[in-house]
Image 1: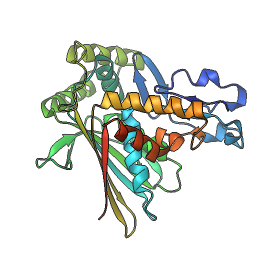
Image 2 (image 1 turned 180 degrees about the horizontal axis):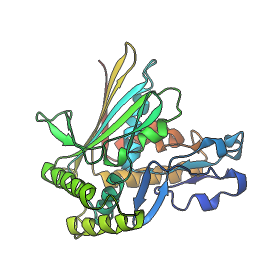
Image 3 (image 1 turned 30 degrees about the vertical axis):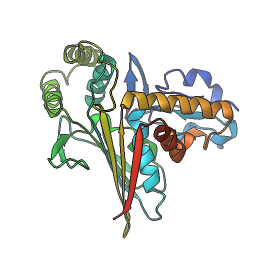
Image 4 (image 1 turned 90 degrees about the horizontal axis):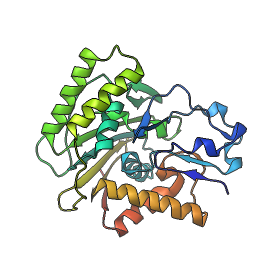
Length: 298
């Protein structure tokens, strides 16, 4: 079995050859860190007729963002009739230097949600009120690059609608980021892509000037909420956890273990939950003390 499963997916395409390569076209979402980027919108028309024949897996963003949300989504989709996913990421987090440059870059690119099976662009530099499970006050959130989940579920016959929001416990930082994005729209939107990236990298280095200390579970806590609907069905899936960067390490380790053991759930282009299995990833995180979950039919 030949498999390429990665975190950033930067080095995956060169390992595929000839007509086995899915051509990445009309890029609508970018996963980028440490200066390496790849567009993850895939045109399946350019796969071979039977793309699973090659037993290849293309799995970008196998990380807390945006694999953790697909765990909640896949659990919700276990209920027959569910076709609409409203996802929210929340974190009490300190952001690394590379992550700061990455999210500023993503938030200035077109961001999309899935509506009636079609990708629709979010408005530029706009925040929304959200209710985070377990927190009484309303918080501000943003699409944060549009997330990976709408891309994963585009073309999935189970899902008609999918949107993702992201919020920080540090609301002062959240509003500062919103202000920076509005400033970008006023002053830098007209620049070409290379010049825009220079601007966002410069701003990112000003926002986060040094690497944060190692995560502490008692401080760096996370919540992922998936509120899912069908015509008459409604499911709430809440993942409560900690240490998002450490969770990313678990996702990577589980991917390596699954590849070496020949235990992939699927091949082709997909999220970590699709390729590796949502329940398997959830179990791996729970065993290491990073996630618990709650499921309610509501």
